[in-house]
Amino acid sequence: MEIIETLREKTSGQIVVDGLNLNDSPNEIKKIIGVQLQTSGYYPSLNLIELIELFAGLYNETVDPLVLLDTVNLRDKAKSKYKEMSGGQKQRFSIATTLINKPKIIFLDEPTTGLDPQARRNLWELIKAIRNKGTTVIITTHYMDEAEVLCDRVAIIDRGNIIALNSPDKLIDELVETGFERPKEVKKANLEDVFIQMTGHDLRAED
Image (tube, rainbow, N blue to C red; front, side):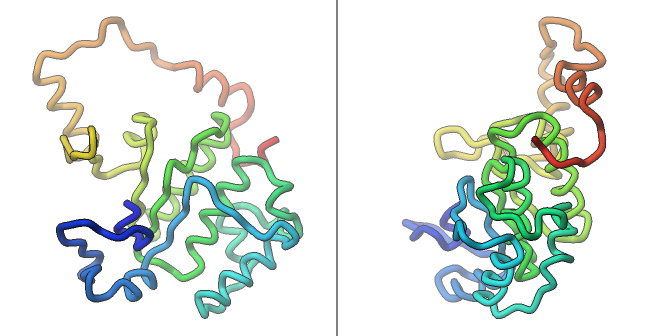
């Protein structure tokens, strides 16, 4: 993933992103992608508006910071510093910065790691909204329920090799066709559903 994102030198093979060969056009690839890393560093003395303006300047783009913050439901945090926000808010802001250059493709590296169930579901809705606007979203995750909900195609990687690549439904159907059965009946709800039901369904600021 870091090779595709132009963050690491490739050792072999060919990398083509939206028709652009990495060998010939690394800078052109950078212009059409957005990258949200698992951990991000931001200038601690700047508020969210100032940070967006800084990144917009680096991309040579003109953006309205408040409109962008509306996209990730953070307008009320516009004057807050990054370090003052909750984990879920930080992740949403990090995703907002990937959208500044209006990318065709964004890469999200384990975006919900460490989030509580409410913040996790909120972030799922944000990712769905970005995808529905036509942006290709590539996610790395260890949560299979997350991949099943968010992804049109899933690549399962084991020891550096892709061992399966298909839609979630197709991968599940192929498993069932082998005669696989779960050892116990699946309940109609799980503990995460209990948490969400008891703490509220709507997008809200995480504590």
